[in-house]
Image (cartoon, rainbow, N blue to C red; front, side):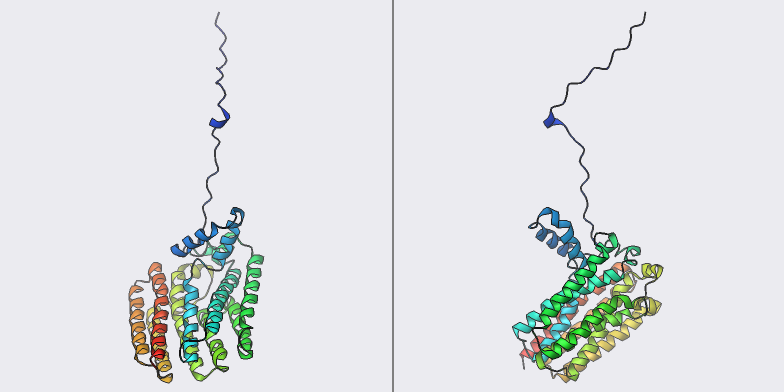
Length: 338
């Protein structure tokens, strides 16, 4: 007669300390594709001093306001410093230098918050911007608006430390900052609107130093509009294919195959405007040496973009930070030699 099958032998229980429970995989921190590696590392280092429960929220706000990509703030800072040095005819007062430098970073952060709010439906369709906090759902549209409003309050508090004309001009600057993100839906020239928004610190700086905005200030403002159109067109060339699919508009799309020749014309116009700035301000030779250096850097930008590959266009855009610093250094030296 066959024996019934024996029940499986029960294994001795594993001690509690030796039990291994499956751990959830570590959640990767998402960063936009164009984030600066060094700035991202700096943010992560600073976050270590905060309680762990705040890390994700603070990181999302810092990325929303582009503190992981400081090049945009620097491109706004250099023209502001040009204006401060020219208006003061030398080193400006430390008070105004501090107000406008901090204001640059605050207003750039505010502009990024409202830009992502305006582009919350477009950014998920573009590979470079799909990782932004609002596009990825890590920040809500309401939060982005609250961040924008809070930063405007801080910026206005800084402006209140200047004079009545500067305060009046600040309202136009805030309007331009809010208008730019929506301009890409209604015009093919949003880069020009950005140039006006980024350059509005120039008349404000002259007003803060001199109590008026002379023709030199408006000439410098025009030059900055040209420069901003140049580098933001290079930036838009990175996303041209995705923008076409998403229905966004830009000078990169408007210029089409003629983008590099048109950039050449804009570069020549900018250099002429800055040449006139130097002659009108009666600057010494270091300024014109800096202007020659800027011309050489523009030539390099056009050369590396000749194949129009997105990574090369992004590299050309980033080189404008050095260009702005070159012009400021030449200007500061020229004024110091007077």
